[in-house]
Image (cartoon, rainbow, N blue to C red; front, side):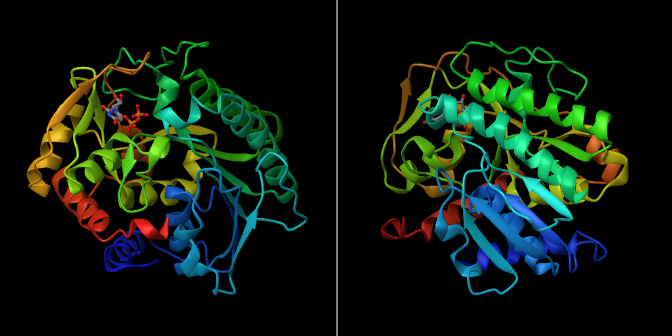
Length: 340
Ligand code: UDP
């Protein structure tokens, strides 16, 4: 479904991208039915690209790309990224597939590792054979429970290699190392954004897939208790989807970003309790805030230093937290749970 909020947001992204670098290009988007992947498909088609989306629909949702299925320049292939094969040549591969929700990936630790490891190895080979640019969606989780905040790309991370989050963190760290090896050994044009918490329309809210942001909004809209883990003093820095997607698109075509890891996120840090309170305030709900045990190895603070992306691409987040939050809440208000 393309609604007004998403249409306006797509227009905002398009207006911040100059040139026609994607017109007529063949682009593969893995995780194309997911949150960020589906936004990228929309933007790329709007810029005149031919888009192949690959998704096994394990965490992505058909409804995110339903509106594209009639578009002759779009095709959705239901496949695992680890085994996906295609003879076509691609100009760009945006490798977004992965399990991003901590509660969900901890139930599927092997698949989560495989998607990052074998999935990225497969994409690296497809990119090498196509001589394509490969953008890999890495994550702030490579920094683990960071001791340097705001965290620059030069920080190596503090990750528990056998902890409950390691399937995600170490999988992404392996993929970064693998793709850097392709860059060094074959000169593959690799770009590695480390994406910090992003939010907006299409962020999954249901069950184990729900993230703090989307879950809290739905809890508030249903007047149910808002479930804060720990004392809620842990922080995250939330980046509105239009800013994240613009950052990813700018990096994809940036020549200076070859073989670089680059933080993509918003450096406005908020506590999880503050997030709950703001959502309560904006929605005017009567939900109580309830406190629950903090999951093991939950990072205490997360905030990016984004100066590298600012210098490389002249990028700065445009959407203030308050505005992004209001837009996201408005979008969730229009959701019809029956269409899941
Ligand atoms: N969180 C919470 N209640 C929930 C879900 C998550 O308090 O119902 C907390 C979680 O423990 C973490 C933060 O909110 O400290 C952000 O969680 P998110 O689901 O966005 O994933 P993360 O940023 O940890 O990858």
